[in-house]
Length: 99
Image (tube, rainbow, N blue to C red):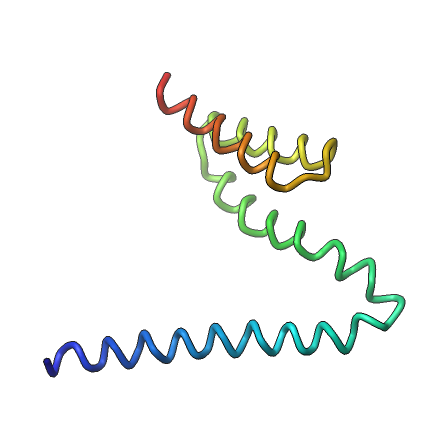
């Protein structure tokens, strides 16, 4: 039981930190949403965050991963729908694994 206690404390602290980060981001976002010049930045932020996760992973990837990312980026550009683009990218990756 002694070995499990520090693990449980670490998990609880990580959960509390993640929750506090999300809550504080939401509260700050409510306050700065009314600033006009920040609106375009806030609207573009999810796409930027998405690309910040994808690009380093794909940069070291194979041709299937690069093709999947190209499909995701192209569909996001054309449809402006993250769900359709992401699902299509996953389908391309799954199809390339089965071939």
